[in-house]
View 1: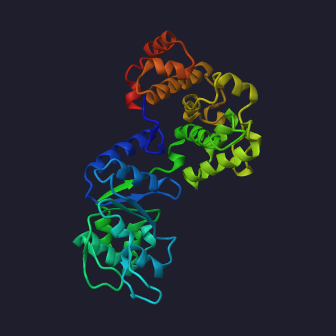
View 2: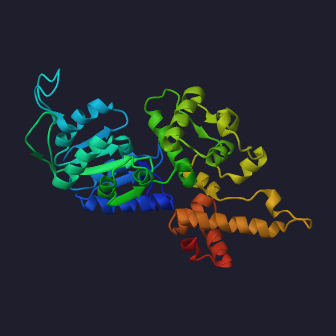
Length: 354
């Protein structure tokens, strides 16, 4: 079976499996700088933590710094530390986060918000492996791996003169792009289950899940806030509908742009345990609107049903990496029935090529 969880990252879509493999490779070389790119809410810090946790630096500190959240006049002293008397109020020396991360990893989130002066000082850390405290005269050697992240287009910022080109190429030795949630809809049921399980620990009336119509609407939503937005939705629903199952009508209006499927169809299309994410993931198979397949002569009903059945089987085989017993369980079919369909449709290897 494909991996569901990887150091707090949830998913088994193809793009997430590729991301997990890349993280594993990046962790092996603990000197190379990494630039993580992705929209807000995709989990950039989780990726950085996973790289650190699998690297030889795992016993060292993982030190996060949000460059957008700390005021410009404080960010320099936060990063580099300062000596006693460096400025008014500096009654004692303080080490910075770069020094605290010595032997470990420094995670610079939203590095696109860092001002040019600090960009130059950071470049020296990457090139010379040393730095100076604010007010200090002595260079301090440091052994730290820098992992940076941003939701901004740094290449465009370089072209516009808003980000140092030399620093960009130093950071982007190995770029990592996290896919947005709208590009991995098959992971949404897994994420919902994960968030509900986490909330059960602190909830007296845990949420019972989402019904099929609600799941279909959620999978059709573009998720500009990505995984963070989905987590907030689950938390919201847990507060308002704890102890029950969320229906399409329960969802906030902005998530109800896609009309729900008829109740009878929902009951017949869904296997008994509708909370199982493996079964809900099957509905990531795209079904074209009726208008697109209808013609003046009508439709070939049997051909359309056969095509959808084929796509469901291929999807199940992809999800289980070819494990036919597990695919049969997800499809709520007998294993012998599935084997007969695979043979009849000649799908023995097709799941690997789709």
